[in-house]
Length: 199
Length: 294
Image (cartoon, rainbow over all chains, first blue to last red; front, side, top):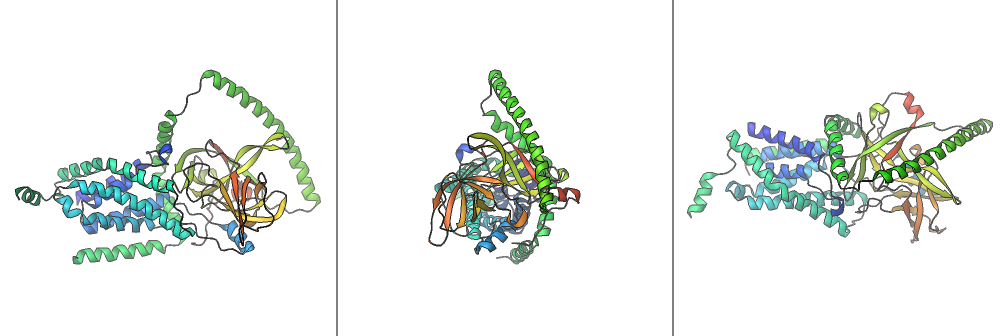
């Protein structure tokens, strides 16, 4: 219980620290997506119901903190005058909750491997998860605004952000392991790890 | 799948549906509350980011600063003279309005603000400014910047549209730049009153100042490069005649045509902006504009 609460605190800190991380202009404005890294690291360390609570919390706070909702009062009238139908804005409050829930479930799939002490796969999945998170966000924008537009710069941005995030993931895993050890929480199944080395 | 997991999944889906159907007013209230919790960290974070990114910028020598200072002094004097001229023109205009019984739609007040952080990503172009609700900055209001325009060989300053306030918190606000596809403006072309379209930014670009698209135009007349694009004031969000940019290219289509527009504002160097606030709104309580869920 204490471990779970501390993970929640870590996620909150992640939200705060995210504001301190600048984007890299020469790398297609890519940045380290710390919130996603911490969420995925937490998602693989806790049982499924707790992961869903984290997904809801992270997605909700993320959207509340970052989403901008614009009203098109003027263009709605202008569009009516021109006789055209305008596409929607592209953002939906709560969509991040869905994405975090979806990709958190993906992380749960490799939890048995992670519990046996194989962290490489989890590390790779943080990169994949961040990539998919951004890709789905952009796909949703395209879907809402009408027409799919994928220039090369989008792929560079998503890939570089995923790689940068993956690079800091070991730190997140180390932090969570230290925290688990301090709280007496067993992420890793020692007996299973032992059996693997015996065979 | 264990029973507990199924139950947790059902509760999660239920909570997700609840969030999706929340009315816009409710989500905006939630955003303001959570935004105010994080606001001090966001502002500090913006300063740290600025320090990190600023450290890589070129440091100017005292000589360069002296030259720049002199140049700014000259420009300031010019602006003072222009301001005097404008004041007399304003009086004249007011007299003419009265004479013509012209109904004044709005009075506007400019709230100066500084950009403290750019939220740059491949598909969002936003910035955080240092003024918020307590400075009477409200959501959905236009943001301008002074740009130098060449009017028949004479250089003068004019207010050009930067974007609009997407969300406002107590002491800061987020400006959605005109270059963001989400910021759409009803526009017309100077000198061609019957030409109307909707100006919007690019969906994704790695350039900080990508060209804009003036869509839903009639194929005729073809727009020549260099023509000025202005806001047409439909809907009352943006006042009529605010400079948006210049036509750089024209693509005639079957039913509708599209023009490429170079923004009047250079978003690369933009630092100081003005929030255009209706004086009517200033005299009333500070309540952000709300509307229906899209």
